[in-house]
Amino acid sequence: MASENLQHKIDSAYNKIKEHIHRTPILTSQYLDDLSGAQLFFKCENFQKIGAFKMRGALHAVLTTPKDELKKGFVTHSSGNHAQALARAAQIAKTTAYIVMPKGAPAIKVKAVKGYGGQVTLCENSEQSRIETCQQIIDQTQATFVHPYDSDAVILGQATCAKEIYEQCPALDDLICPVGGGGLASGSILATKAFSPTTRVILAEPKNADDAYQSFTQKKHLKVIRPNTIADGLKTSLGKRNFKIILDGAAAIFTVSEEEIIHAMQLIWERLKIICEPSCSLPLAVVLKNPNEFKGRKIGLILTGGNVDLSNLPF
Amino acid sequence: MASENLQHKIDSAYNKIKEHIHRTPILTSQYLDDLSGAQLFFKCENFQKIGAFKMRGALHAVLTTPKDELKKGFVTHSSGNHAQALARAAQIAKTTAYIVMPKGAPAIKVKAVKGYGGQVTLCENSEQSRIETCQQIIDQTQATFVHPYDSDAVILGQATCAKEIYEQCPALDDLICPVGGGGLASGSILATKAFSPTTRVILAEPKNADDAYQSFTQKKHLKVIRPNTIADGLKTSLGKRNFKIILDGAAAIFTVSEEEIIHAMQLIWERLKIICEPSCSLPLAVVLKNPNEFKGRKIGLILTGGNVDLSNLPF
Image (cartoon, each protein chain N blue to C red):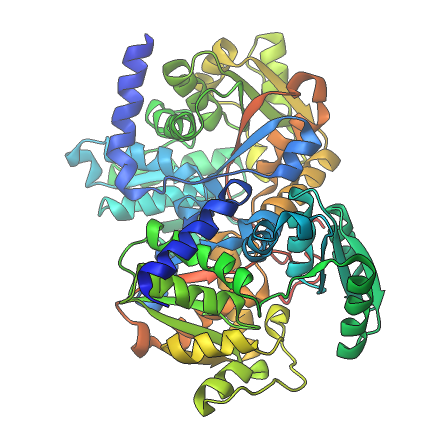
């Protein structure tokens, strides 16, 4: 896509969703700047509606659906933030969200989805059961399926986050974001092409779920097998569209260990005084692990979400 | 003080300190608005330098001290945020802060003060020992004593917080802030007179440390006896200057129980995704406890600080 075309698409996505989302603030910390030797700008999507950036993509997908389709509702499978985001987006659009969640999903997550008016259907904890259950709902309702990340509309919605960052913090050398399915990562790459083409987009991934790193390095789309990481938002494998955009546009992918994730998480909680999910800590963990790569640079770091069970902290 | 004169004084305080402080953001939550029936604007001083609003007052006191005096350094007794604030303010002004702390003070607080270059002297855990130890330091060094709240310079510094709020959120019906020694409370009253005279300033106090409520109601300056509250920042009795300003300018003082404080604290953590001290929860606790007083109103709530021991949460 040419960059003016991209600009137009992302601006248009932003204009569609902006009245229903927060323009989240950017926080800084002298202590973390000193510690890293860089200038760090933390974009607080943990303060976003429903507590995560996922609101942007789900809402954009819903609001760009033609009226006749929109009335029939939306369906997705997710036990994470996308489930809440789609439920809330459907509620805003005065239609129905059918959310398929695995039977083992935490009660608090099911309750949150229902709190936004989502209709929850429980399925077995397997990919096959999730897909079949979604298909049954689609057959019955003709609802539109909204993939959590492998969707152009969702990617453009997520791109509005980096668009805001470049308005709030011009002239960043690097933008670092965590990578799971790749919705935010690919959206950030598109927004960077459109609004700040000299900024490097760097992705941060748990070593224990490093399919994006492996796929990027080997230039072929690989799936993650049995991921085991505290960063539960990043266990997913890259989507097809997402892999393509990342292969083309990411400057690098760095991985970090579980210990490095927890250490960075604790620093963020203590120093920025905010509550954020383990996944949020990966960009800071990457900066601290690779001082030669980042010293002296002006860096945006996306904090993706804040939906944490406060009674179950790793420190 | 006439209101133009006050405006000038607070603007001048703000201009002195602004390059060294954060203009902290305001957060909102649809959930908390729905729950309270009001429009709530949370001013996040937990994101302030050193993690609390105290930075404003201490820095203003330091930066308005004549050069000859400034060179001799500053002294205070505090085991809380004022200690860190004065240490950091002195560091900015390239002079020395002598901080007197009781022997029982948590190691983490002593470390934080030293981290900002403060020279710590431990004393016995009694008012007499604190005063004597400060006096010895003053005799030896001619350092300037900076009271945590009963000081015009400190009060004007704290007033810059409400000044920012009125710039960020015009036309508030109410501004609610917690009251301990009364530095923030009296500063907020002065800023309201100067910049938003139709806004009511409401103070929030723990029932278990209700000297401000008692003093206000009985119109005489009473001290708190054996306060026992989780809101450790609010155990202090009102200062003399502070009492006078509060008696003249507060619209009301409401008290809340320990359970109400903890409940509001949990709501703030979960819904705003921020880390803040128990003292911060009092304004929200007051709103939730008195729906008839606040329904339909546009309310600023000051979150005072975020220096919390994460390993010792009440939930």
